[in-house]
Amino acid sequence: MSLFAIAWKSLRQRWLASTLTSLSVALGVALMVAILIVNSVVDTMFSQTGSGYSLIIGANGSETQLVMSTIYRMDKPIENLPWRYFTEWQEHKWVKQAVPVNLGDTSEEGNFPIVGTTPQYFSIDPVPGQPYRMKYTEGDTFDSTWDAVIGSQVARTNGWTLGSQFKMVHAGQDDHVHDELFTVKGILAPSGTPNDRTVFVHIDGFFMLDGHDKPIEEAISREMNFFDETREEVEERYKADLADIRAHAAEEASGDHAHHHHDHSVSDLQKEVTAILLQLKDDDFGNRALGIQSQVKETLRVQAVRPVGVMKRLMDNLVGNVKDAFLFLTALIIAVSGIGIFVSIYNSMADRRREIAIMRALGARRQTVFAIILCESLLLCLLGGLLGVLLGHGLVFVTSPMIEQKAGLLVDPYAFSPLEWIVLPVMILLAVLTGVLPGVTAYRTDVADGLSH
Image 1: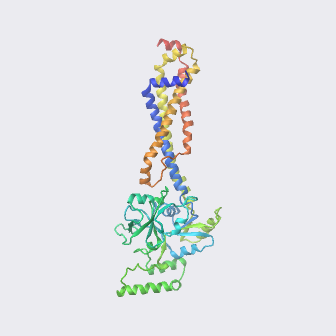
Image 2: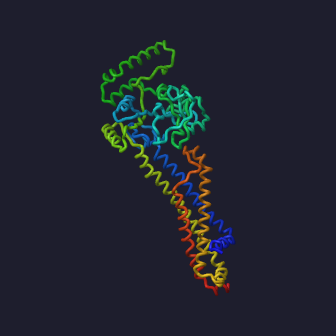
Image 3: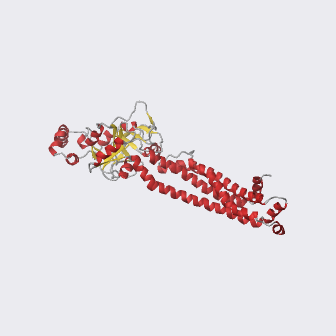
């Protein structure tokens, strides 16, 4: 009979203690597996989302706030920039694409963040090599004033489908709902990114909502301050627009204009942009991004941020510490489980002195008895570890829909973390550490003394 067979029979004789001991190991391993998988999902989301953009340009302030609000919609946006500043970046020699992003409003249903942007937003992969996948009606595209595209979580939570219509809540005013209706023309496939819980509306419709166009005098003052120009220069630049705006205002004042004042297009002077996403031309080494950052730094009004660098700092300084804390707690749980194995086997030595003495009397060597005890410890650890891996993946499988619904994280129910490969060697090391002392006790058992008991 092999040593493992003997060890297995011994464990079966103490089935209750053995089961509880293995279960304690399994729970620790299950928690570790679940943490590793969820952490890999979080790490992927924060490290890759937005990596398709070379730079984000926004009003001067916190770099983290700019990235968290623009890419992850988890913070309030900073200040808005003049639309003219965005058009200058569109014409920059190093810029392949410049995409405007307007933030602040939320959906009336579900309170999901609204992003006002252009169709070009969906032409840049949020993660290189992973383009947007979208369900849409043939012939319908995101190119009309009142068009919208919604994330998968928005569609599921609100029950919206293609053709559904919705209203928006004005930024910071829960009691002010815009009258205009947007129509869903596309639904994004689940991606595990913040886009799953975002509503995208066409920027033309966004500008035409009440309160989204800057009042004339404020717009003129902003242009003067931002571009260091005189009032005369600003008015000359927007001469045609100002004439149209004032004529329209006169019609409304006289009562001759029967339509809503947002039925006409909004002047560029009155438009604003919260942030600008830049995709640069041939910037494999990041030199052009650094050049633009240096150029932008010369002003005190604007900042240019590399989203990948900001999120790496956040992952290292915050998320990474939380992950390490959870893994440390998991290691403590497994260590306590190991102590339980040690106590279980060591306490059984007193009851097994006669059994060990009989084995010795029948010709078993000391080394054989020592090996049997180590095999028992190894079986307890490996069975507990295997059960823990299964429980951990079962936990991820069951909770992944809830995690997606509550946190917006798309967790693959069948995900596997490469770090799980350390479970086997850890369990073997734990078995050796917890089995050595009981094994030494069995090794030293005196045959005559054991038989007398």
